[in-house]
Amino acid sequence: VLGDDTVWELDFCSRPLLDERGKKRWELLVCNSSRTFEHSEFLPNNKINSVVLKERLEQVIEAQGGKKPRKVLYFRTQLQTIVTRALDELQIKGVASKRCFSIMSWLDERLENVYKPDPGYDEKATAGFAPVQDAIPKELSDALRGEQWLFVQMDWASLKEEMKDVLDGKAFGEIFDPEAQCRMQITDDTLIPGVAIFSRRANPLSGWTASLDLSNLKPDKKRACLVLETGVNNKWKYAAFEKTAENLEEAAAWEAAKEEVGGIHFLAIQDDPDAETCAGLWLLLDRPLPQV
Image (cartoon, rainbow, N blue to C red):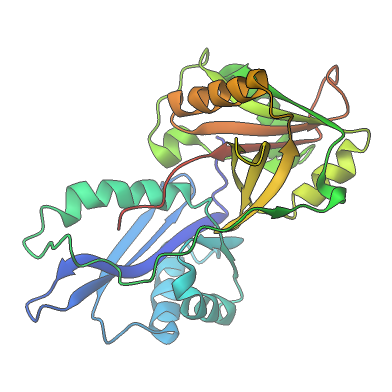
């Protein structure tokens, strides 16, 4: 099992569904990482506050045997105040993150299977939030940089073996289960593209990197560097390359390989190219935010 079910994901937002008064309906979704439990309920739009959210979350926790999650991820920063207040009251850590891969996939499914068939569905009834401006990549602290890096690839079976060290606490990193969380089918021989960072201080570098909430790596041809995406909307200039035709071609091929496997890729931090193990390993996913 690659997921971590001590981590839950939450979405609390209006949906493109209108009630009999023409008002947008609000919905609470909560699930664990592996999606072995999924809770959904519609709420009247006069009940959209942290007190009601806290009450509903208490009921969900009780239904799951009374054990609180270690942390709860959410991706809509526009509702940060309500969500964090409710979670603080319950003494649960809330994290604004684009690693909400389970709930994002669930929302994609619900759009097709629940919202669109609903007689109240209105595609013009968006959540009503101003779109978050795309962040401009910032300079990254030198402490978070390796000395050398390469585009690499690894078959899924070998990558799963490497990820065991993260699960066992022997390596820094964060992983997820593409099959359980995103309903993706990956065979063991599928080649997964990645980026390997080499550093003589691989262990402390991995520890510092773990303080960031990593979600995606993307080559930026204009800036001739890799851009690291963290949190919900932070971008960092991560690894530079010379702007030669050969390098730009390699970056484009890597990005195409990433698209080929549905956006899955990884970041590995090692002492050197011959190292047997990774000091840090992150499984990442390049995907758009849900349409609802």
